[in-house]
Image (cartoon, rainbow, N blue to C red; front, top):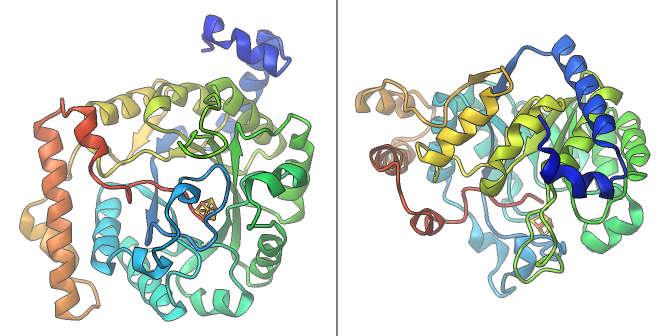
Length: 375
Ligand code: SF4
């Protein structure tokens, strides 16, 4: 499973013999197989804005953006968000979380979107909107199953550097409030920002302390204009080490691995290391492309079956899609607006299917909202 030529440098870095890493991953794989079905699916994060009031996390694309646009003006239209929920549901994607910038949506707007989104997907949703106070969590309670804290890294010194205005303490308070309200807790961890293997103990203690149910293990995407611009991309083995260790420490933890277009080939190793499923693939823009084919192929190399699809539209007529909109408890005007957006997305996806060889430059131009970071 491990490409030894490629992994030599990694293994020197992490001071593990290849056999040690293989043994670790093998152990994690055995534990995964004993606790979960042999399936894999794509998890979609759905964004409601591309602006952020924090804006200075030193790894984040948002920290490079001009500060002159008020965050509320970066709000995505409700019809676009809800059309995406309809597509995600119909394509069998899990909803990783609903997310966007802190302070962008007013609580009533947030509540209304959560209400309709949970109606569309037929279940409650994970929410990732920064630290949320207990009274607001109570307000959202009918529609959310849990909260995601975008903790990013757990080492206190490193955290101050990478998230200077996003301390951990408010997230810790949110996790405590979530516990009291019987909401699930999830967190994020980005590999490649300067953490060391000694931080594993801190991470394990944190997961235990807040009884975390789910963790998203991403790897750094070096953004132009940030301090990580020239950083190396973490290897599959770097990311796999964290996943495997967490799987061994927490056999039932839901572990999600983030990939990116340049890391599709990481999938077999990350899944074998004990990740349940994967996220961070621009699934709307890249639906039906060769990259999407490759994602499904790599994911199933593990022997797991792929739940949902990134490559085939459901066998539905336009009338069937219209019915998905008509059944929602919304006013007619909003339904019409969702319909327009829904068919815009579907037409793009159909176009992709007709042009499997779409040039990469064209793909990149098609909008940022497909995958950003989260607050
Ligand atoms: S990481 Fe999240 S909170 Fe930090 S600047 Fe980026 S979007 Fe905002």
